[in-house]
Length: 164
Image 1 (tube, rainbow, N blue to C red):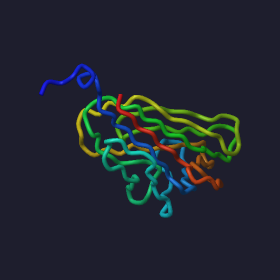
Image 2 (image 1 turned 90 degrees about the vertical axis):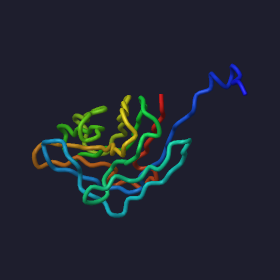
Image 3 (image 1 turned 180 degrees about the horizontal axis):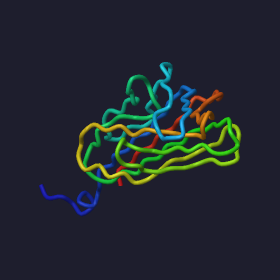
Image 4 (image 1 turned 30 degrees about the vertical axis):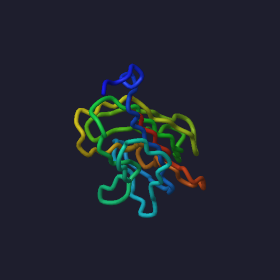
């Protein structure tokens, strides 16, 4: 049976959305790296449209990230929304990365306390192997950069991935 014009123009949708529910990922270091682990964090799936399994990133403990296998090769828009917290009026910096490729980076400056932050970008999946996308942070010497500290909201780190 031949495809109709509409069927030929349709594109499969691959999308995933979910969130971490726990707080308290903290790093005290001037170089980017994983913050402290949090054993109580879980990942809740909100939407899964042909995307497959997404699990919480675990590297010696639960960290602010996700692990997945791209359903198909191609470019994906990845967005993560979270509360960054710092105990310094200088800066705290956060980046979204896969261990090799930095997808995005943001910095707070002159703000002590909690700030709503977004890291986002286009990520090229050249294969369908498992990969981990995570948030790393850094702060000035003896100061801390945290993710979700002191908050009570349910969706402390919210993730969205959409195939472009």
